[in-house]
Length: 371
Length: 218
Figure 1 (cartoon, chains in turn yellow, brown):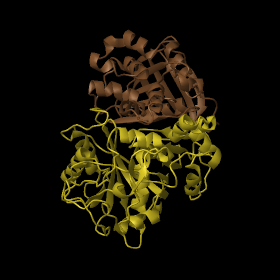
Figure 2 (tube, chains in turn red, brown; figure 1 turned 90 degrees about the horizontal axis):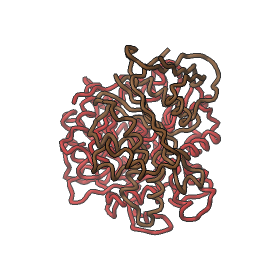
Figure 3 (cartoon, one colour; figure 1 turned 135 degrees about the vertical axis):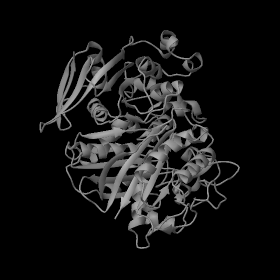
């Protein structure tokens, strides 16, 4: 199967994120310092449960108003002023969780007030009220590739001509709902993740994350040039063992990156089979290009990871050191010799490929370029 | 103007009291026996409307649902403090489409699961019209909830639809068009009304997203 990437270049006018390590600049700096945000935490919050690696912005126990709202307000304060939520300046909201933690809180406390934030549309209505957005708010949810879909949709809106600027906004906060789910799949366990490491047992961590990007048709120093997407539809929680799904997406974005010197920010959650196939596929399609994952520090920020990690990549590129953080949490040996464990200079590169994967064998990658 | 042509259309509007078990019995011939046991009500309905619509690895699916996998969500929430892995993976949007396409082992270029409400239909149509794939299946649906419905957190009605859109007018049964204009947004059909309009092949039109929408039939 030979897929091609979609060339819909857009400028990044503004971009930031919030993780348990701070904003994008602080998060990039902490990753460069090798800091690990994950810590072993009871997976059901105050209800206990096994201790699993989580990187949280405060307590996981849901509140009224929802615990994520103050952090979203904090992040949104940095969004450039615009009449967001109109046809000219639409908003694309992406999340895999929305307010799912409120449903768990309702089940535990039987407090019906939590239900006001339990559905995707209710959480988006809350955001619209909070931030004064109009009705042109497009909402996508496709597990852990969700933010990539939002960014491609935003680029298409710009290229179609109706929109002048698009705000892509993503948030995913860990709750007992999602921690319990991943724990039931046995990939969120008592071990810290070590992305791309050859080890006995795989493990992931989960982290809170929210991010935004303002995309524009105008020329900008940092651009998203192309996107590649592919859906294997082989298995709900597994990939084709021959790696065809990873290869299809990686080869498509490699075509778009032809002639550029790129590094790769992989998905790299810490699972073994997917980590091996991903590392091998990118090593094959991008010979010699270093691949990193930051989920060994931040945990997996789920549907928002594509946008959160884009913001971190931009902050690293813009940083005084111009260094790209390595794969925090992994000491090797690794599935490919292209896995970069230590930070490296960005000076020799003029682009980056940022990739994510999701349930159903969904694969996404985008090409980030800069002057 | 952006226009796409409707080449196939299937709509499922079962009786309001149809259960997942009832749908399983009614639709079992459409699915492999091993798969049908695990499929949700919404998965069965989406599978039924996609039946006969051949999609290839270069094609795309746009899937709209406000509440999505309500019953799997109910089951997953009820399974705590020992959460069910099957209910967890099934509860995640866009499980209904994945149940069908994984059953078929049918890879796709792009899958666009939308999750809004008020302008969900409009945004799903816009997503479909902006999609460059040769064939786009515009799919939507809901399944009736039980205790989440009592709390106002689920659809009261199960339904699904699928329309196969292409850029080729030849042999089309209808069309979806968007003409840019500066008119202000007006009310957009909700997902259930849209499904009913498709079933009746009723023309639709409204203004929104910076343009005028029309769904027309031949």
